[in-house]
Image (cartoon, rainbow, N blue to C red):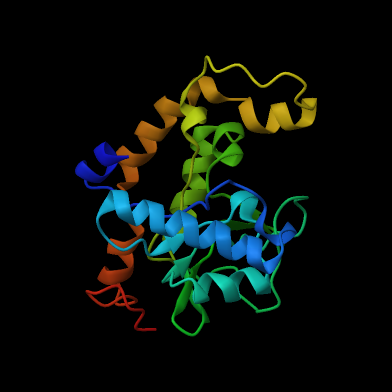
Length: 219
C-alpha cells in the first residue's frame, strides 16, 4: 500500500472485512467504516475521504453512518434494481447525475450507467468491462462523457490476473460473473486509459469545485 501512495494514487476505503454493509447492524457498520478509515490513514499519512461499500451494498442507514464516520464522499450507489446484490436508497439520484450531495457534508459519486433505449445500463467496470466487447464499451464511455464531466470506472486486482483459479465450490453463475473475460482485461484497460485518460476522484472533485483544498465538500 505504501507503494500505491508513493506512486501518487488516492487511498480510499472499501471497508475492513468486505462484508455487505446493508446486512449488518449499526454497530457493525460503524466498526467496518471506522476501523478501515483509521488503518488506511495510518498508512497513507493523509485523510481518507472516500468509501465504497462491498457489492455496492448501500442503504439509507449506511449513508447516515458513512457521513457520521467522517467520510467526504461515498461511491456505492448504482441505481440499478435488477441486480441481486446492489443496495438501494430512498433519495432520488438522477441517472445522469455525476455528483450529488446525498447527506450534509457527504457527496455521492454515482456509478456510471449508460442510457440504451429506455434502460440505464450499468457501465462502470468490473464484469461489465470484461463481458462487453471493448469497441462497444468505448462507445458507452464516449456517449456518457458527451454530457458528463467524468466517467466513474472500477476494477478488482484479481481481474488483471488471468491465471487466478476460482475458489472451489463457487457457484457457476458467480464464477462466470467474476472471472469471464480476464484474459483481455489488461489490454482493454490500457486502451481505455490511453484513449480517455484517468485521474483521482479527490482531484476531480476539487477541480470541479465540489471539494475545497482541505477536503471539505462545497456543494
